Image 1: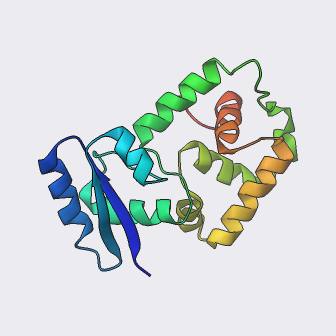
Image 2 (image 1 turned 60 degrees about the vertical axis):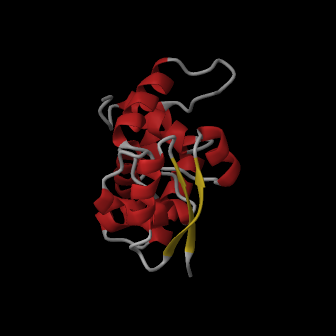
Image 3 (image 1 turned 90 degrees about the vertical axis):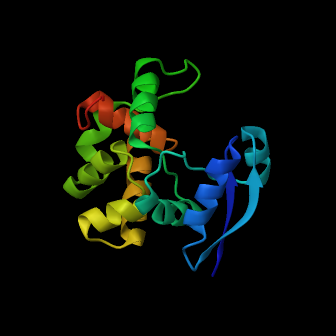
Length: 165
């Protein structure tokens, strides 16, 4: 299966370099280029920042294509600090009180989610299958009453399971 990739940057030379890196992988093909963020959003669903190391680019594309989210650690930290400090009044963030109901393994998974790892990366780190990692994430969402992974990250940071940056 060939994954279709859109390369976006406002500089033609940067786009050409990224295209060259992507095209070295047999299962990846560049299908379009965008010269602006608006064009990129119109053409694609997932994205990576251009500071992604070349050695990680292929794996990052595959993670996004699999439906997982991927954010650079620096962005993840800023988002966490912002969300944890000022949650929207209309958004109910789960309490840390429910942490007593999670297993030790779920606690490990929650900590890795807070570090910005995808289900695939969690599975690799804990030597479990991606399906098992996904099940742990689902259990955490249910047990903690969280709407999404962002709320899980907030709970992890408020409870001290993860550092705030």
